[in-house]
Image: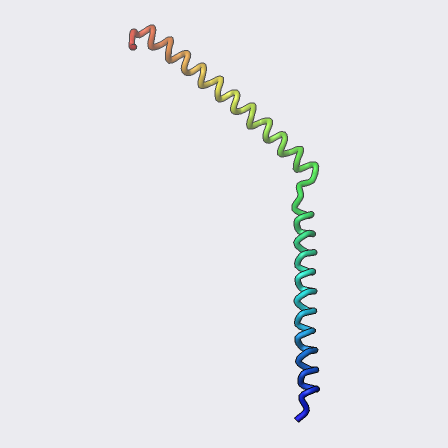
Length: 84
């Protein structure tokens, strides 16, 4: 039995497996970078997020004003009725 052709065949198969693994790994890395680049928000999305943030801040300020007015009216009513 000739051992040299079997060793040569095994070396070719192992080498092919290594090369296929390397190519698959590089391909995965490239596709992940492309996906990451596509996931970045564009300018329009950033502008919309800024407007949403501003409206949330304005709403929070208005809610605080209403709460302060409510506390003030409660205090006045309590003083008027004589409740401590």
